Amino acid sequence: MKSQLRTTHGVLLGLAVGGLFLPGCVAQQSDLKKTEKDFKQTSAKQTQEITTLREYEIPQLRGELEKALHLTKDLQARQEDLKYRSAQAEQQTKKLEQLAAKLETDGSTRYLWMQKSFETQDAKVSARLDDLAKAMESLKKEVIDVVQRTNEGLAKRVDAKLEGHQKELTEHQNRIEQVSQKFTQFNQALSGFREALTGLNDRVGEGEHASKNLAAKIDADSKTAATHAEDVNRSVVSITKALEAVGKKVTARLDEQDGRIDALVKTIEQVSHKPVSLQQATKSSQHSSLGPNETALEGGDASRVSAGQDTSGSATTIVPPQESAKSELPQVTSDPPDRVRYERLLALFREGDLEGAKQGFASFLDEFPNSNLAPNARFWLGESYFRKNDFQKAIDAYDKVEVDYPSSEKVPSAILKKGYAYLAMKDKKRASSAFKQVVTLYPKSVEAGKASDKLGQLKEVR
Image 1 (cartoon, rainbow, N blue to C red):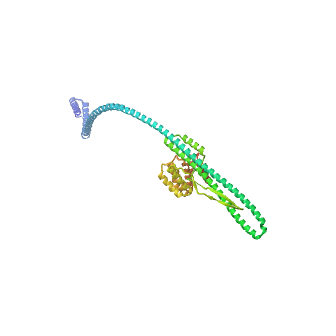
Image 2 (cartoon, helix red, strand yellow; image 1 turned 135 degrees about the vertical axis):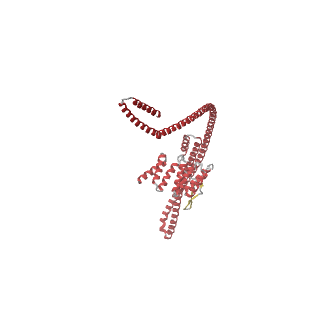
Image 3 (cartoon, helix red, strand yellow; image 1 turned 30 degrees about the vertical axis):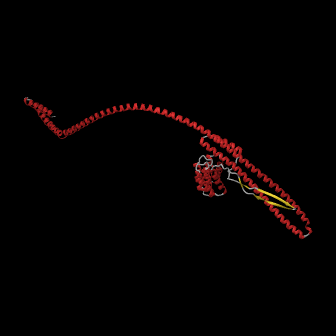
């Protein structure tokens, strides 16, 4: 800027001097004056511009230059840092390449080693599986032999018991025939007695005193005859009841044997995972030989009745029937302890000792938790609570049958009785849900029919 000002000043001075030296040039003088004025104006402007440059623009330019220098220094530092980092990155890449090469070599060796180890393990596992298969086959054979032996033993025992029961039945039938024969003899004696009475009535006209005595004797004889006839009738009724009880107990024993065979087949199925066809075959064979029966009570009482008749002279004396001592049916001594205990508790329940049955079934479950009769004991514990009108505890027992023994045959009965308990508690919603559960889960069972009947009754009430 200063050099430009100097050149302009020199140019203007040269023009001014040239104008002075040119004589007679008025126009040039006027031009010079104008130029001087212009020069003065331009010089004033330039001085103002110079001052503004010195005061404002030059410091700003210096600040910008300092900033640019600072930025250039930062950029240089960053370039150096980048160079250092790039060098480090190159070193790291080299190290990574070396590690990758090592890993490839190690991976190949480890793969080969693992492959060999897997091959050896596969060989060992296959050998172990072969051994297990052989052991399972031998175990299946042993189980089949045991099942056959147990079935044969059970069949022999059942046959022996059936023969004993048939002998008892024939004995009872013979006794009934004897009683019937004696009853006919008694009827004949009674008819003869009536004939004697008619003869006595004809002789009444012989004397009032004799007739009174004879009438008294006749009344006494008729009363004794009536009492003896009543005793005979009662004895006949008791004999028929005893025979019915014996028949029920015999059928109950047979059904008990069915239950034992079913339980044994189930245990064998759980051990050897045999198909259900074996169980069905054993059931059908036993049912075809024994027939359908009801649940059995433990032991049995049979009353034995004997009647006699003694005739001396014209009077007839009838001996009333006397009951002999109670004879129990033979019990199987080879039964397991849980079976014996369960049958005793079931007999207590059916005799009406609900408190004893309840405590007994609870202790049975503590003593034999893994028994095949545990679900049945849990069910009868619920029944004991149900009979004592403790419905909530009964429901808890039925729920445990369903939860702890889902594959048991008592599950449908437990769910059905749970519905009955809810009905007794007047909770119709839960009762209907329990009945629906029985119908949907066990549609072909007897309990399903009862549950559907109850559902129909509940709908009618609504």
